[in-house]
Length: 316
Image (tube, rainbow, N blue to C red):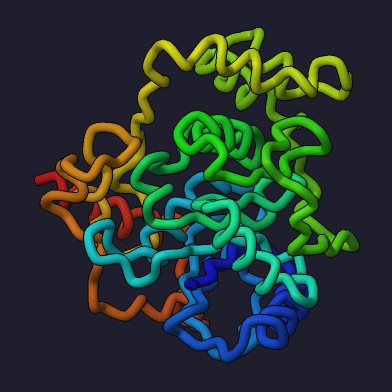
């Protein structure tokens, strides 16, 4: 298992998350713990591999689908010969409950789960390489922190059926869960942003899945909540799913690596697709040290110009 943590201005929560993993999973180091940092207020909680999205401004509202894709790239390393069969995508404001490892492994053994999502939302999402090949990347057109999990969970349900266990939002999107409690959320401080603050994201969800499905996903009405699977089954069991286009292949702007070759055409990945047949995700370079004083003293426009120059150079 490789754990990929996304953090934003939460050093104390990150420290507690780290401690909970250390006591429930075991030794953590750069081989099994990756941290994607999205804020200048950061303290490394312990041995890990850290990637700083240093050009992201501190007042950014967030971009979780992109952060999750970074986690998948770093965590699996390759879709042909992955670094680990399982990658866990986790937000820094959670802690892992005592005994969660045993409950998780029992679920995998008894239920055959290849995807386990602990809510609310995408607080902690366990993805097996087989599930990743079926579901593919997170949709980066959800360019904020809302509704990317609705989209990904629906796709997981349609691709995997009972091989996925989803806690979801309350009753909405819950599937095959059976009380599989693995995490608890630290609530005293968060980003302060909600999906309701950006109706554009919900509009994209509706455009992609249709009004009827979204009415059952984004609801507190018990009569609608319990029927969300019926509505999705009715519409999508007999026709293809929407294609998952990757719109931003070059713009991990503060990272030297060229990720563009990993974003081929559309997902989901298939065993005989170009992504898997030709391209691994691996590399050997260490990340640039972006957290130094010298880097942070550069004007933002200079840093952006350098990053754009790298991106343009890859296209030429």
